Amino acid sequence: MPNMTDDKQMTAPQITRSQSLVMGNWKMNGSISFNNQLLNEIVAGVVSVSAANMTAQLVVCVPAPYLAQAQGRLAETPVQWGAQDVSVHAKGAYTGEVSASMLTDFGCCWVLVGHSERRTLHAESDELVAQKAQAALSAGLTPVVCVGESLQERDAGLAEAVIKRQLAPVLALGPDAVKRMVVAYEPVWAIGTGRTASAQQAQDIHAVIRRLLPSSDHTPVLYGGSVKPDNAKTLFAMPDIDGGLIGGASLVATDFLAIASQ
Ligand code: 13P
Image (cartoon, rainbow, N blue to C red; front, side):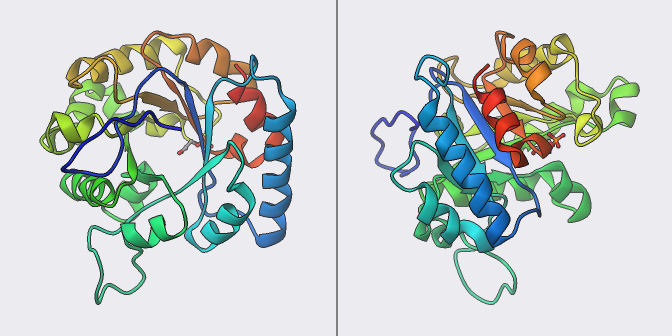
């Protein structure tokens, strides 16, 4: 569970870095029967692994239609669940959108915002992503703000500048808001490609992000992009990497559990 501290303006809790966080992003994968098996295997694994080996908080971010299924299976277990996107609007004529309060109706505590697939395929701007983060916070959800440069941007030496640009409107929400968020650094060139950033490449950008954040105790920064059981340990050992956002490997219970046990 995120550590909660009291706040009168926003209901989302402050998130500390004291516990590592391993989040699965299922993307648009799954079915009732597939999810059932995957969730059963994850829960069985978490329960059977000794507390010493599983110190991370596990979260699965499932497609919106399966939130009720996740809630039904994961309530009363140590595994939490979240969504992959949220509307900036509270309600109304926004066909296809899902509001933050709808997510909390299904027991969600977490929501991804600004995943590179949404920035690219749905033209989400940095400002819109910040508005989504704010909408999540206002409903008591923890937004996981995803940032990351493309290969072209990295090759042009623009990685840091891109991250700073993407984060600027989010940081402008103010330190109190930022302490209630998670940031996920996902270099676009490492997503689903099997080409992970080296631990040092990731650490370098994480250090840049960390310096922009208002507190060294809050706002965990996760790494995402081809995290697998065999590279998770080195990545998570870096001082500014507080856990992972896992795509493909989160669809295989043994891999997800192995990553979370690093
Ligand atoms: P992969 O782990 O499949 O590279 O995906 C990373 C990601 O996009 C998680 O949000």
